[in-house]
Image (cartoon, rainbow, N blue to C red; front, side, top):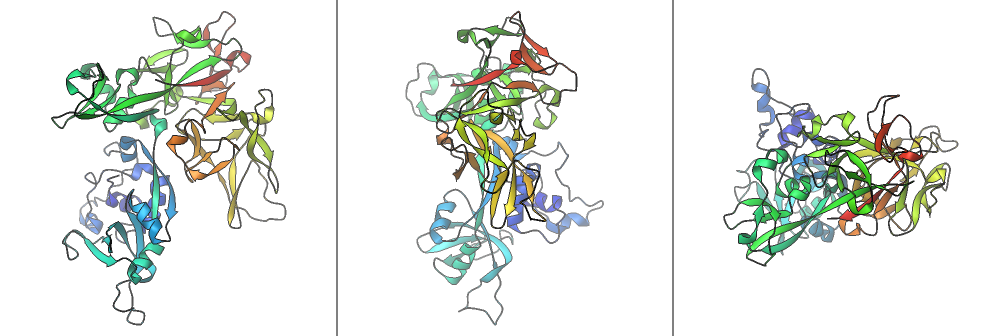
Length: 503
């Protein structure tokens, strides 16, 4: 991600002294709005303080800057340490390693090496050859023997070993939750292609990022992206006969949901005026989620507001009206393939944690309040508490509890934030998902290829406005006449299950 280092310095109020790159990774995770294009906030270090008034602007709260994570459909996960040369080489296949070293004094200078153990000066390992590592410095492009800001150190050298021992990199994940689509690479004959109508959809894709992300966001109107022989990228509405050709393309698969009413078995469909209606499964309307909105796959310029489709007017993510987004309450979270549901189980020390128990629609302990998309807390409906992590000596425990371990005076508690990513339940801070076989945290990081095994289905849920006021018609329901309506209370007329499909 090509981001501005200067903006981090400005926002962290460390213009003159900079900051350790480890901290930058953590700040990026906590403050994604700080990640803006390098070209928008140029590197000036402390020179920006010399202007009148000082020009050390920070992007927070301003619409003048591009949020790179929004443009790239990405989010920053945990920092991962490397400790061996093999781990460093594997990490460098995906991107640079942030690292540091201490500058040796005469007393500890080892055979002329420029590095010593410690962390007084930050830089990055950006690549390697059979014999050497390539180090990127922070002194500008004129620094170093190659006039590009880099220098070399031999693999296995004292310097290389010190740098590797301090190596760390952030996990950066693609945000499938942003528009719920994935792509398959194919080769096409560009003469057969029909492109997306720019007059109809051009403005709708403004501020939606790179080509694939634009395609993902406009549902059935876009079937993929192609790199034309002219070098331009175009959104493809139809691949025609599908003949193999010389041009590389990416074919889209949209991950959609159908909303099934639990009591009647009916599904939500659309009438000619774009009102929501109850229909049989064959006429069900597909939706995809984005920023807690239910967007129509067939009419991607519209999303569900109350009990009908309404035009999407706001393009900027930060300007989405909280009164027009949704959340889920009192849900059973069922493993798509395991037959297990998320449940409250006894922690080995005290309190309740999460685990997998055979699906029981009537069990209160299998009920949770969650989000449709974005970042949210996992709340136990029965306990009225969110899942938290408690630092207990050298390990973390995950519990639903307001109490500390018996006899413990102090404990650090952090409410866990969850998100959906490719139908999997994921915790962004550690990059881990809920494993379908245990319904506990997996030992592995999020992996898109686990979409089938680790999919979790929101079952028998109440769908309600995220920011609805007390006493308002906040709940999506089906009345006695079979009409989709908004009601003031949640009951059996307002229980829905998400059914997944790929289109």
